[in-house]
Image (cartoon, one colour):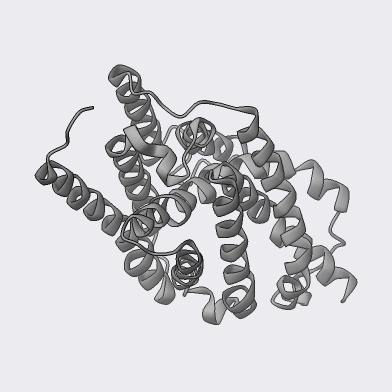
Length: 286
């Protein structure tokens, strides 16, 4: 068995915590803090690109022990593939003015990072966690859990929708027809951005320091809530109920499944349908 020098192991942890601190900085004071007051055009691209870059660095840094951070091969594939795919969907939606749309330079940054990570992992010949049917089963369970959570949060969501803006009846059929594309977009835009931080690396490193899973489950939900502080005045039902409930659900399913494949799917489902279902409920309560 190969002996690992304590000094090397310590350096490894120091670098890991620096990268994690960078992710937390981007999410909390940068995005959360600035967006609380205003949303300048540069904020989202800087946050998205910076977060994806640091996530890729952490994946590379922990490539020999990704399973300890709830990252299996399916989750890794989702992280690598769907962030760039997000840029193509924006283009298909004719949102070319969005800096993150393909082939705008900020959007191309995702492709460069994803290809760089994939190439680095391939050349390293790292024995990655195996792809299994269990991973796909948890992916499906995650989608189902996302649907159930949407039903629970639909009424609170409807309470913060301005009824005067509901000039036509939302189509239930159109909502679900559009779901696959919205799901794939949110998988890259929101889920890949937040799940590796809150339900993978933060969870894994706190566990290594001796925290109990139950403590981490509550703590990550609190941080996730704080990361959405800008909702406190704009969408108070989201801040006080929908976001913390979502964080607890996502944390629970990642904890139970031991893979963020499940929470990635649940997160994307919630984001893809949550507001639309809330609008449908708001219409019927009009």
